[in-house]
Length: 188
Picture (cartoon, rainbow, N blue to C red):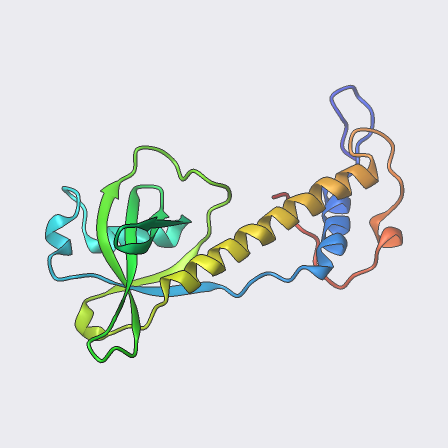
């Protein structure tokens, strides 16, 4: 068993992970996130100096947060990654049948993403003639679902530490507290 700062025996993290998994058994993780952005022909020329569309895609795939905003032209979304802020809105294709998530502009970030846990995704960028379907409002909803799940994971971890007496005496082995087939959680 690991020792605490004051020399007492602490509860192993594996036990805490097992209890957290049992507590989180009711919450299922959302599906992996994958989406396609559309860019206009002039975007590569308007990208910040020294950066290209591939850099933008890689940055978003590494993790981002999503914010919904409203403006005089309707709703738009800001995808805040580590290096870039990407402003996106929805447009319909020429046929008017397929929504496209169109990049309005890209700005360099001046800090880290702001609100809560970042979401990783598989991201692609396409020119408009490819007409890759993507409803950015749906992507934003999926990002929010991931954020809610991550908060539930954190609450389950905190509660399991509390139940097992992280800093003091343990209540019991987690298998006796709750049995579940789910693998133990790792520390959030």
